Image (cartoon, rainbow, N blue to C red; front, side, top):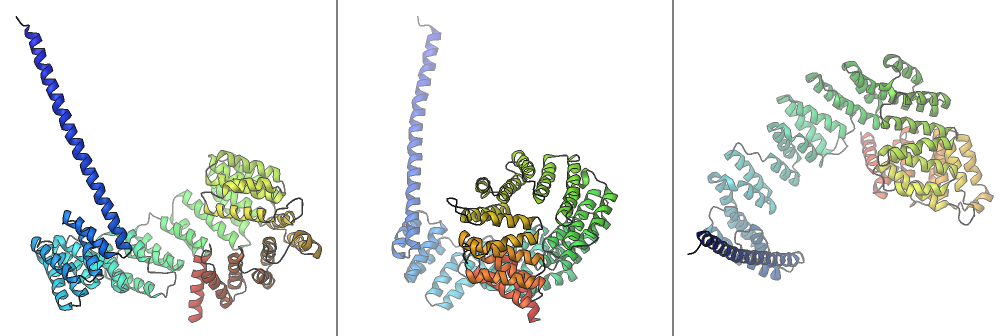
Length: 624
């Protein structure tokens, strides 16, 4: 008699084995089908890639054969269709395209964008009447089915039928009030050069939804310049002002302020920001940002107005301290004779503590480089170290301490401070700045090998300004360092640069003068057009500018251009000449000449944007 348990086990085992066979067969089929699909997809991709290559190379007949095959396999793929009919049109096979599209429209009458394809084909075949009929069919179809409106408009736009594209978008918005194609319409008006209508469309978009503010600013920025009299600038300003009068909104003041900032009309931007603050008297951020921008662009009057406004309106002590820091920076920049009194007044109001560390650092800098009182500066900074609450604040103080020690010629002490920061904040901007100061101090000392080692690393610094300074100093050293104990003049030149750093202008000038004696010219190879020759003349010009001998400075700069007008200092020379003529000699016509040289002869210069802005401003003044 069979055991029922064994019999049951056999039954379960048999079922399980059968299940395994079924699963194995299923997996085999699955993998076979999957591999077939993948293989088939690879073939399609390869064929499309080949067709695209033929298309780009202008071999339209070869491309059309492949696109035809792909289209037959996937008749609803609009890319294949578009490419196929384009190839036929390029070979003037207009009848083939006509038949293809008529048949497709019969099969899919709801795909009304196909009427645009057919209309364009008629236009290519010089049958404008038939083309117009098809375009109108496409436009009229939006009345019955607005779901294809965007595709119809894009298709018109792809064929550069811009007026039809605008009409399609407008009709779509009429049929569906929830849709908004103002952005697309504005872009098309931009392509047409219809700036007035373009700006109106962007403003309509923003009026409908304030979240589009940044998008509108980005889009408009492609057309406006820093020239307030530029046609696009004028039209945009008028459009916004009209909207502001009809329907006052914060967004219109924001746009006007933004426009005035682009045009560097900071005082006008300040008026708009004050209007915005009047509506929301808790947010001073934009006025602070405007003050910073004005300060960086040396519009000290507007910057001062901004920071004074903040001090008057804010109740927050930290905001008052930050605004006062900029007021003191303005006093230093404008050589206000009461600068130290302003420092003392700030310390009397806010104290000498952890909250005023940045002002203490600024005071130390002022005492060292403006008043030649480094010992007092060191005392201020050493006291400031006792207030620092973070390694970053400590690093800022030590950086300034290092600068002061370089100023008084105590290089080893300076290097200790710079090296500490470099070690503690290795990949931070402050660490990289400290590393550059290590290199610069080593250069002043004449230790060119150590300077080069630091500069090599800094050439890839995250901060562009530090990277640029590092590259400039590195090239100066490798182009001029002594070879085989033959003097090159670099040590003497480094001493001259140190004297300039220390505000010892006569001493720097005498060192440079000694380099240009007949004996030293022969010994050091100071040939006109060579790097050190250009550097020496450039430094002389900077010294003369500090001494307010502007015409003598221009003369030295002209020598560099005469010797080598394609040297690596050329754009620096042109820019310094332009700035000297513009702001020191009050000769905008001559300044314009050198700004123009940067624009047309030095297109990769770091001064290009600023030169273009100042050139336009001067040109406007002269025309007026």
